[in-house]
Image (cartoon, rainbow, N blue to C red):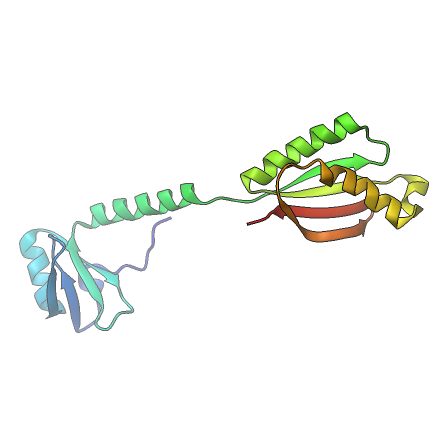
Length: 171
């Protein structure tokens, strides 16, 4: 996705521009027609780099090379971007200790990677109406086994399927 707002050559409407020549050196503030003449003599284009500056900044360089460098920068920015997901572990009231350890191990790995973890205590039938302290104990069993420091982003909330808790790694 290239930035289409860069004006080149005759598209530049400012009466004067601050010119950066092909060697990357500041050539000073010149009338636009003079900057265009210098670009044509060098066989290159005059590209408006910063149109909002006063006066606008324009660079003398090949437009194809400029587009290539711009796309490289955007591609590099996309690869450095880290997207956090909300991963889910589902626990029932009668889940055994070994299974809880496995789920906590997965949650620990996800937290280390920087993701958020949603802990769902799945309740069926009458279990939805059990004592709140009992249900909090069941969630605490899982949270005690997580091997990373975490904070509770969203506290235990009732959901249609039971109780939900969202945790994330402390910074």
